[in-house]
Each structure stands twice: as structure tokens, then as C-alpha cells.
Length: 256
Image (cartoon, rainbow, N blue to C red; front, top):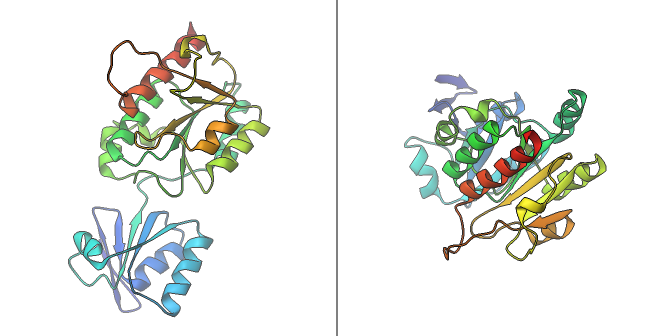
């Protein structure tokens, strides 16, 4: 799509990229949701200060990157700034959770801590939708970009499950605790088998990245840790496969 803003060209490529100083800022202030904004290294002055302030105000992730990275996405004059618009509408867990209770359903929330691979993210969302997950929570920073690949891998699930993008997963867990929702984490250090854990009450399941796992602070404030037993000697399961195993144990207990 091609348009004009303050004599600056605005171009959206593949439905989710906007570039140019005025176009990006104007789109943010007009209410367009963004996954993130990239700013070229070395840009200083009033524009940089204004952009940082605007991104903070609208809760948008701002990344400072080399010009070569921007050039991968835009061949024209990007003016040192590219915005990636959201392909979905993000929500907030504070608004979603009360609706689950109002519908007389037992909440099942999935919290993704550090899942950055878009295909893993899409695969997790696909299984989550099938398993009856009510909402997926992701951090504002350090989460997979919900792009066309993620949506395709999810087989449309990302359009069906509320995706809550939050500033702090720690604050999310505090809110869940105060709302009567238990938080569970898989841990290789635990001796409690997943099959012996009660998942029938309102709950959230935290999934960590394959590289770093769940944040240590989240491990400490979780209500319960468990382990997925294994007989073979492979180091670990793929994160989307492990998530599927956990969610199906939850579903087995709830409908069994």
C-alpha cells in the first residue's frame, strides 16, 4: 500500500512493514499496533528522544540495530526507522481473565517466557487452541514476532486465541495469584511427575525457551514444579512438543 504523509512516503510491505520517520510515528499515534520498531544505530537528537518517548507511551518495543539490518527489509530510503505492524490485535490478561470466570470456565493460561522462534511459537499456539487454552501471554520484549510464518504454522490458531502482550511476566503472575490462578512450571530438577500433579483448578502453565528455560525468578514464585519423565537418553524435548505433552495431560485430567 502506498500513501503520503508530510511529504514522506509511507509504504507497507507484506502488510506489516512501515518505514520513514513521519509515517512510523504518525501510525503509532493513530493507534496502529506494532510488534516492534527498529531504529538505526547512531541516530541521535530530538527525533531519537521523541521516538523513545512515544514507544514507551504506547508500549512498543524499540530496537537499535545496524543500518545493514534495516537494509534487509527495505531497499529504499527508510530514513533509519522501520516499524513492524501487528498482524493480530493484542489483548491484556487483566481484561481476558474475568471473562473466562464469567463464562463459568476453569482458566487455562499459557505463559511463554523467551520463545523467540516463530515456528515454535506457531506450533505451540496450534496445540494450545486444540487443547482448550483460553489465552497465551507473551512478554513485550524477547518474544517471537507474530508474522506470516507464525500465523501459517499455527494453522489459524493465532486468530482464535487471545494473545496478551505484557510488559512484565512477573506482574502477570502476581495478578494471576491474586485472582486465584495457580502457576505451574516444568523443571528437570523436580521429582514430581507431571501425571501426579492436579491441573483441574484455575491454572497457568509457564513455558521457557529451549536455550535458557524459565526465568529463575519465575521458577521461585511458581506454585508447583513438575517433570516430564523420559526413558531415552536424548537431552531434551523440542519446546513445542513438550508443551503439547503438558497441555494434553491437563486436558486428560479435565475431561477424563
